[in-house]
Image 1 (tube, rainbow, N blue to C red):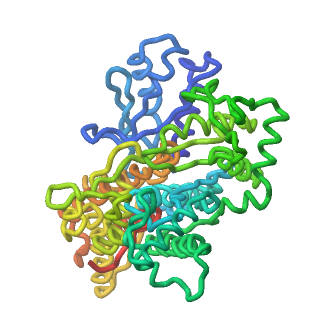
Image 2 (cartoon, rainbow, N blue to C red):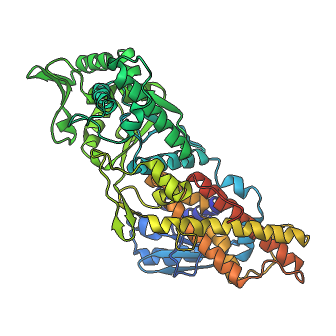
Image 3 (tube, one colour):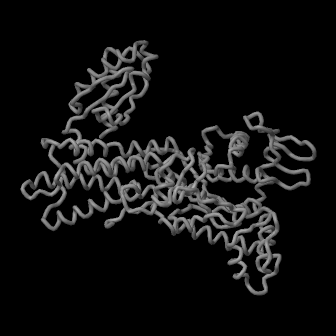
Amino acid sequence: MLNSLRIKIQDRLFKDQYFSEFETLPQVEFAPPPSHIDADISLVWAMSSAKQIRKNPLDIAKKAAKIIEQLEEVAQCGFLAPGFINIKLTDAFLTEAARDRRLKDRDTAGTISNEKILIEFVSANPTGPLHVASGRGASLGDSLVKIHRALGIACDAEYYINDAGNQAQLLGESLKARAQGKEPPENGYHGEYLIDLAKKIPAGLPESEYGRFAMEEIIKTQQEDMKVFDVEFTRWFRESELHKEKALDKILQMLKEQNKVYEKDGAVWLGTTADHDDKDRVLVRADGRPTYFLADIAYHKNKYDRGYTKLIDILGADHHGYVPRMEAAVKALGKEPAAFKAIIHQLVHLIENGEKVKMSKRAGTFITLRELTEDVGRDACRFFFAGRTPNAHLNFDLNVAKKRSNENPVFYVQYVHARICSIFKAAQEKGFEPLPMTSSENLAPQERTLLSKLLWFRKTLETCVKDLSPHHLTSYLTELSSLFHAFYDACRVIDEADPQTTRSRLFTCRLVQERIAKGLELIGVSAPEHM
């Protein structure tokens, strides 16, 4: 109903004599108003259209507010400098929106998009168990895939296994050393996981196969880690598949035929500096060995060849230099800039008792994702990871994550879902079932605010897709939970002396429960019925 109202307002504005003379005007877009504004919807349309209309935004806002206030769905429409338009909806509109049982489905379905998106994330080297930073990438990627799909956008998830380099040899040397009770080579892998892995070496396995054996076992471990973390991939793609298909040779030949590469010092280069890279990049070394960059180009072409129209790569904090070269490669493949997007997620700092927990993968003392999940629980991990924009560092407070109190944000949200379940149980025992309120009912202020917040669920998901970050959803769920607590404290839900109000408030509770359950599902967090 919110989108229908937006279209109606836009139609009224565009057809009004004051604005109709202008052929092109910006679309009307709704946004939730700031908390200190007594309104349900805020518009910046007056400011965005000022250039075309050639008038002061405040004057435009005054005129637009008068037009909008004439709509039956609008109780009040005001304006504020420098040109904000604030709309307060009628209680009848809010109750009608709540009474529409299609709202639940329409919130998360119906977007028509011709895009087919592939999000690649985690893609850790198969040389050790997944660490905490991998968990942040996994949470980010999995949530974005779920949110895209909820909005009706075709989206798949992929994990790229780098199993074709010289890592297997170095891993094998490290495993051999551990099997002999020695320290691995200085440039090898020193994690204690190799001590346990050495005990699993099959009898009679040639030492030349140690590296491959270790890699396959570690891949299994990584797949198990993702399963425990409730992350599913459409495909686990192996780099070795590209080599079997001679994909690197084919892409190199294509680039040569298109005169997009050159030779220098015996090596083959791609001129990426023309596309804002800090230097040109080698595709084939002077000794004939292909670089990882050439494999990455072949891999991304493979993605496009499979029918994906937009590729999103989620990368760790140490991959900033990767972005411009990959953007140049995508351009060399003949794709538009919008066909590729890289997200760099920043570091995770684990905090315990006010101090950072040190991690060092090379020293073998890093905290694994499995250890963190077992320590604080998957729900806390997923909510904490999703609760921060990827371009900001995350301080993960282990003490807070373990608390069963409102100080813990995931507990705060889950508790509302569990509380509503207990309300339903009590209501059922008294013979009450949720029923939509009638449009003639007077809403308590706290219930009205709650119903207004419910209108913004779909818009929140769209913002997550626009910004490629699920933190908007965790913020929404936290704010919705806060509003529910205020509603529950101020409004008696079950009142045997007032059956109609009881049923309608139970219906409000049901709507809140549905939004919280769906929101938690989209970030990989459970919605418990008991706490």
